[in-house]
Length: 388
View: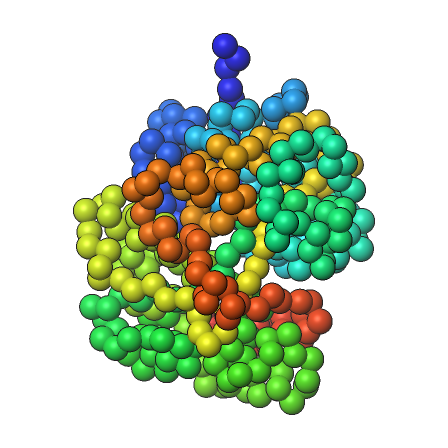
């Protein structure tokens, strides 16, 4: 039997601590290759400033370098594929900036951007055009999750998974119900003031304001954008404790009272409470209302990837129905493969946080990059005002 090399994770210290909190001992050892590697793992997590990962992932058709989000795939499943070296980013903007600064793929083979950023990545010449004949399991994706407006014909990407944005809060601190983004903002500025985290992305920060005020979150109207900036910078920023893209674990460890959160991360937070012997009923998850985000993350092969064969093999591997189900159970997001849903264990926890009702989907809105430059400016100004 072929011996599989363990996956290796490169991350900053803050992300490393989130990973440690999110993984139980079995998952952690699978991710870093055993207890003997733990010290080396933590030492390596002190700095992610290097823009050029050293050395090849290891040769062979099951070895490659992955540039992705934290806590985003089952480490046991990845290890069963082969030798995957993972480097983590916290936002699409950060990932693109690193690649552009490096003038190419920066040594990575596969990246997981959000779909709306595909045109920008392609325009920068950073993505390989896919040969879908090399991904036979592409056929497993449901029609709703292929041929998206930002990547017609899946020229550059295939669906990784999709989800939405809402909130999770500690009801031992927040005594009233949160039913809308207006409620979220009010609670954040009052009983959860200084105990609130916001996703570390510009569209989500501004989206919160636009959704609460009945404004299209893709607006390019300067009056609407100016009002958003005025409120976020001068009124809301002082309520923010942190900009955190993975707040689920932090909140359930008592670091926040209220968090804006993606559905899968909220689910992981609740699962971690159960694993630690706590009471998940102390926390309340809510999907954003009256409108909220609809996003799709994707698998893409970077231009001139050194391990292209392994990259194609992995994309086919991860789109296998059984492998997809295994990954869903870990990260808690719909992978766009309906058949995977039917393979999940009957006792899968928080099933309704993975697969949404038609009513819930009807209030989700896809984003665009039409107002990206202005939204990023607002985000930067708010972050500076918050000092978080």
